[in-house]
Length: 274
Image (cartoon, rainbow, N blue to C red):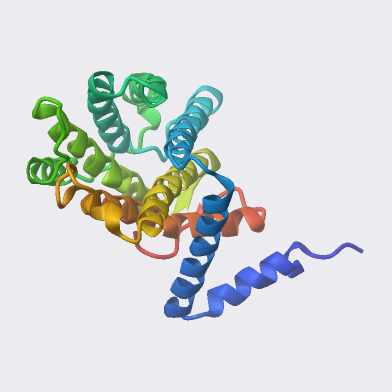
């Protein structure tokens, strides 16, 4: 007779982790994150590739949603508000990118924006009868307004015309909290179907890679990168904080995602508040 799934070493490890206090879990999570950062630092020489990988994984997550909408003919569990906020920051960042960079990041933002707009169209019109509007109730102005106000006061100082740095900062701050409506919706629903879970997990990986870039840059410069001349005294520290905020927002979900995957569960159950 074969071994039971529940008695495997990995499941035993997860069971042990669940029994630990929140403080011990936090220490273990920090240690695991630092170990991954160390591996990334020594294996990837050009740290700008972190951003390329982050944007590519975000796009891959959107492709998972497109597959779900086409295959399942259902948008159940998807937050339209998160997609709207995502489309907003992508559209603004794309305009800024055309004027300030026009590189591979611009191309990735373009295809991701088109994909996000298609997802929004399907939710609003083609599959609106499956949209769980009663659970997707987080007001988006709670997210957009604070991000806009912060961008007015904290933004990079560059040679570009003034609105562009403000718009760029707005995109950074908006992206850091764009997933909140989706997480809130999932917490209300309690159970999360696989394709939505894959999408949110992809966002978690993407944000971790973005955060890794800033961690490694700060470490290599012994903190000097936080106050890089010409960028605005508060700009880079605030971006660094924004990346960490989004990473920690998604960390709890990623834990349950990995646990469910190890246990072979198709549906994910959230047990703690978002």
